[in-house]
Image (cartoon, rainbow, N blue to C red):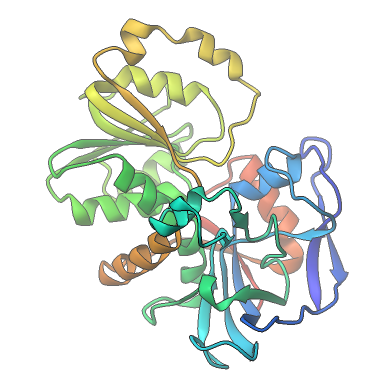
Length: 342
């Protein structure tokens, strides 16, 4: 099968083609696995973290990709939940132990044995992949394959982030950074909280204009002061400066949720600018988001179909995955980037 593989950790500023197109052995499903013929796979900023070693794969070569849509081609002998021909999605959560306290409570995203698709197991930058039936998700028919792909991470992590803000109708929500995840969060927030204002902070005007198209009440640069204080905010950027800037804009008792697997170190010195009285006093909170739970994926897909959310996608061929990743590094973004394998 054709696959784009990562052979080693690399610096994207020095190597803008980290993935290699190869003929890779077609995987074989175990007893509870599905062999999935991939039709689409979203391209995520987390793949940049994998490539550059901030969240490194445990082995090489590795096939990246954790926003996977495809159809079941073969089922293992113990599979009961899916049949051949079913359309399924594969998300960041590839497996968890199933028995620890976190798994029993439905927080399998916090499991010590959490494994990620496209990092700890081969993902969707390939014509075929496998997944346990317990970690595959039916995809609502309202979405095309290309639309559905970014729902599996950008949408689901955005859903978990929005839930963790504790937002109430009438609150002012800030979205810091406006890429694949934020352009789906704004659609959720407008649906769930119709009396709320949404302010967007983005570093280029094209992203700010896109945010206004989707209903932002105000859009400005990362360092700008919004017209009103924020009751809650979600940061989707890969760096530290927006954290400091956003905390200054949070109202007393407000919460900032950081939606990132890792942060880059290029501007870590920005944290030295934290002033307790400005950034943290008055019971402000900071909360991180760690992975996604299976229930997040299920709940979000149901909500996304009901709204319905409409992802905006930029489509690339599998062999152009390096170009899609390069555009992420240079912030050439409008909505989500998706590899089309059909």
